[in-house]
Length: 509
Image 1 (cartoon, rainbow, N blue to C red):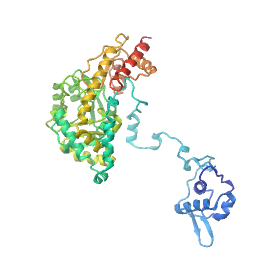
Image 2 (image 1 turned 90 degrees about the vertical axis):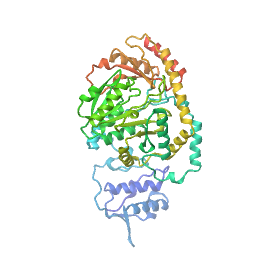
Image 3 (image 1 turned 135 degrees about the vertical axis):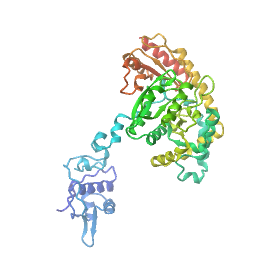
Image 4 (image 1 turned 120 degrees about the vertical axis):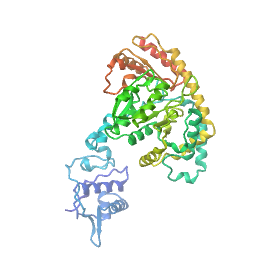
């Protein structure tokens, strides 16, 4: 059948050779141009379409290169014999981004925006994906920080000028060795600086060789889940607790065992009763979200559980630097004498969350396995961020910044406590806040929690509901799971005072 170019429509405002190439290619794919069809000479096709011959030649060249057409010596240009027939589909009239009508079925269109949008569950068939459907992170709040966003430090105080100078110095004359593939465990100098910091400030007797750099605390938790858990294993997690950690373990196939938290921390008796658990995830420095600081007696009991069961403790010390009475408490890892604690740290709560820089401090026997597993995913961390943070720490900026952040968080905490509306019906009393970057206030009922949060949102104030931190299968009555979780470090004191004024007005109104 002779080729008829009359059906090809070209938009003169866009690249003509590209449009012609796509039009011919799509006609081959949907069968309108059968194998062996003779194409017009470039000069003839150019005349028929009223375009330059060069545009036709470029389109033909691309089709030659991709194997859609072939030249026969002395006989012209033909559609090539394809090794497999084009996909068959009902022809649908569709417009692609090049601006001409193709008549191509949607399934064959090269414009991805035209492809049908199917639920992921329809196209991904794996047990892992079925777990992701129910265990994934919510999208973060949009816009700049506002009162009372949880999990955000006072990064408006970060010394960005200092950071920019150190970053510029690195790229001005980079060490060429650092621009090659790096150690999956992370930059050696940064690991040494982190180890030195943890020895001096947290009392941890660790070495640089025990540290693996991660892309934030969440990747560290995820690595623990991937390497410590077999599908079907029980994992004890605090309930209420950090749901993103639970998601990481659940995606790895774990059965989440919610363990209650009392005034001393995780209930070790309940953990021991969950006999299928060999991993426990805890936030002992400042429990998230209740704010409880784990007592020394409970810490020793938890370590004894790990030794007795040959289990593992994943210690998330995400805001351990923030303690407002005395020095920061020594973490569980500093008390561990059996190599059962995996310590998760992050710079995100001292610098800013977008930095995506964290670390694991591991028992020596686990370092190689964690490094190898991480390398499969990301090969190694981004180089300049590690190098700049190492210099930031070596020059003393990091320690000074921590002191500045601790003072700012204390001041912002005090502003919240002093201005909190204390006579709102159904809202409990304020807790004492000795550590961390958030506080939790009890509320009488779930309905009251939801109403207060909705009213707060109406005046541009963010508050999290305590009910969202519980596991879905929690047996505690819903009203007993209600509360308000507020971060107090995200914005300056003036913004906190203004937000409290709006809350007072809308809640009392």
